Length: 462
Image (cartoon, rainbow, N blue to C red; front, top):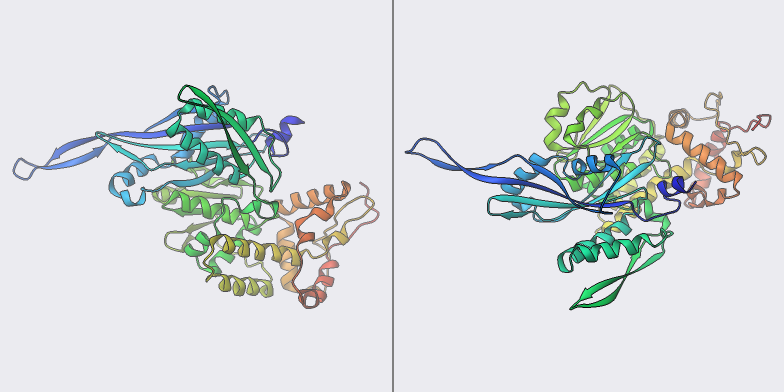
């Protein structure tokens, strides 16, 4: 229905809400010590979180009103301390994202931009602009916030309302499309029509929006990144820790994007507010990012079988009892070799694309010509991991068995079957991704072995 389509980015409005959240605190001076050696100490008062402005003016969704401020400033006390004691670290805008999961399973994305804090006499104030949407086109949201923030500063909120109403009047653009937006602005008692263009990224790289592989590769060594990749594939519990919110958000989103076109189906929270730390004790798989200021509280919790990644120090704080080494050694070796080549690339965008291509190439090779194993009559994709295939190498069998047990594989499998029914299977990115010259010959025997592991049961009913 229309509501389902809107929520899952198939159709409907570009965004749901825009909120401006402020974090403020009073600053006082307090004398310490005796009269002979009296010193003045700066005391930062209790943090005050407040939703300053919203679009639309009235938001009926209480979950959004209650949750968004906590996600905009997941570590309010630490934010105020850094503004006061480490100003060099806060004299720049911060961009990050978070995710709210609805009861029906849909994910609503929050795209945030924190402005440079203001220190006024007796007060600290910092603002965060947040766009909420069931679509995750961060390229559109970033352009929107550029315009909104400029309009707020130069023309006021009235002009911002006009612009946002115009955005909502437009259909959500397809990948690569440019959305034209016009809004009226009052200039010297006259109304002037201003036009703006918002362009959505091309589909091939849209999953890289708000992903920074280069930041992840700067924080962690390549073998460690491949270890995390393996933990993702078998759906371990993973917690990522970093001091800077933008670094944390970029890296957690990069981990999420590693498995494309497979999608992580479990709890996914790029930045977890301190008040929700108990989520880290959940018995199901999760991928969660937490600010470093919450690490001491995290380690006091009863954590079971979890991988804790410390981005600031480039190490694993805690590992599962058994780290899953499921990648076929030959493919793992190639990933390691190619990633090492890319480390010298200066262009951040090109680096991200090259790394994403390697992960995609990995899945394209493992599932090479998988469409041959989809029955053209009932459109069932048969994958029998229990078949005894003596010709299948132990390494490939180990990977296929482990990965086929994951939720992300199950969901992907069902979606491929639906594409087959709709006659659109040729649109699958794994089919469109070319395998490099020579790979067919090198993997030919292994592909044939894998084919014995992927069987079509022609007698199976729909």
